[in-house]
Length: 347
Image (cartoon, rainbow, N blue to C red):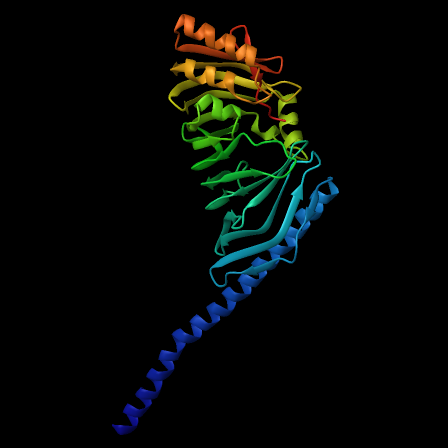
């Protein structure tokens, strides 16, 4: 009896070791996978940077470090600067990209120390905030989901740079995803949404004028037709190629609040001309439009046609109308016969 019990006891100890052995083997295998994944990430990053350089981009950054074992891949890219052939660019002391190691199809990119944007012909502007974040997912799909979120951003033009339209905001958000029809992704369409919350205009600028030193908020949605033609060596080329292919914005609708004025906007379609400026009509159902238009006329911006804005303000006051139509043509923004300012520019 004693010998039998002893054998049974030894057997049970060997059984207890089996789960630990299995866990150890799984941990070794997972660690190997993690190192392979991070090596692939760094290799693809270097290859993408070189491909951009071959297309005329300027891409510079210091040594990349990858951490996050065991469940995350965290890539830190210090002293990065990327400038497109058009001159549009961005630089950051540090960019941090993170993804789940077990599902590297969704990435979050952070700029914890802010960004510097370079605007062609206009100079640089520093962007800081509580959080500057880009999220991208469904990378294997034809059109990925994209989110850009800036929380309490501030905008500071560098010396000798042109002013930036706003100085700060509570939040700026941009979303892009495939357009859904009957619950399925459409063949060649994307939905986009832009949200601006409580933005403050720069001193003497058009935003400060329109809001009468108040806040500007916007919530606008649209569908992009021929989204597959959004391709090119840089942002300018991307929209230029799309425009030449007949690309357009459709089903545009949203809301604007400028100080005490507010408006609901809609348009069946908008497109861009060869000069990159919008063309088409935008219908507005406005509340207190006179305040916004007269404030625009008094702004110190050289881009605003003060005579046209004053004329539009007078005509709006005389008719007392709330239904207005902005027309983008010939590179200008028109309200009736009055030119207000240049039309918004895509490229």
